[in-house]
Image 1 (cartoon, rainbow, N blue to C red):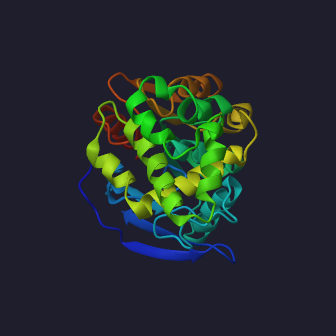
Image 2 (image 1 turned 90 degrees about the vertical axis):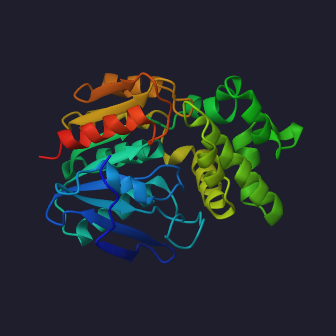
Image 3 (image 1 turned 180 degrees about the vertical axis):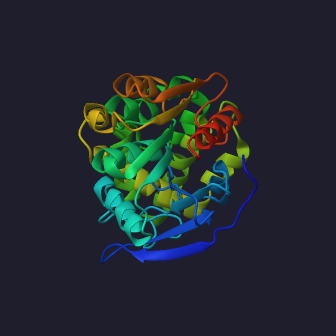
Length: 310
């Protein structure tokens, strides 16, 4: 991981009548352009995300997607779809006069990175993806209905607590009703429970610091509302669309970094992607879960960006 670095450019871009998004640039203004796509949806960017790239060789563009981070309005769901976010990246690319760029993303960032590359393959030089999430029904069900609960039964109890017993056959729909409802106190309680559940399952060893951050009122509200909005709407893509359209990226070099014990986005999705995108190098990290900050995953991601730096 490279040393901490401050952005040399920070901007807000009005992308619709409703939304204004924040983006920043760091590294070398004359370096190789790279787009960092954060997770969630609704996760926002963090200063540490700048450190996965050699600052002498890369010009890194980091974007707070609609409704989260410094983008406004906060936690807004209107005009907030996968297709909207893809077009936002294009607006930024053109505004910055970037011809082509590398795309880097993990978890939901891998989903959006794949969708963006399949929509605009001609502007993507390489893909570096981590903790693959393809948005399929079985992936959503694994984390939010039945699957990861078998491994984290103690954490699961806290996740299901805000939902009445009679509504527990479909947790995503039940949470969506609360998170888009009018009861502000219940909404905040549900947002924290939703967000803390994901944080609790994201590392090989449960990390209290991560859980505390995900449990903060403001962060959890955007994270839970936007995630649930996307998941309720099946990420605004067709089932298995990202696999079916993999031929569009067949000539784009890539690296897939996947934790063997990823409980948020199980390794089967990385394997399925690799089978339809064989040009990409698959790196399964033996002693890691889901998080970008897991030591083995961090090292593999930096190796990948170093590989594509020249």
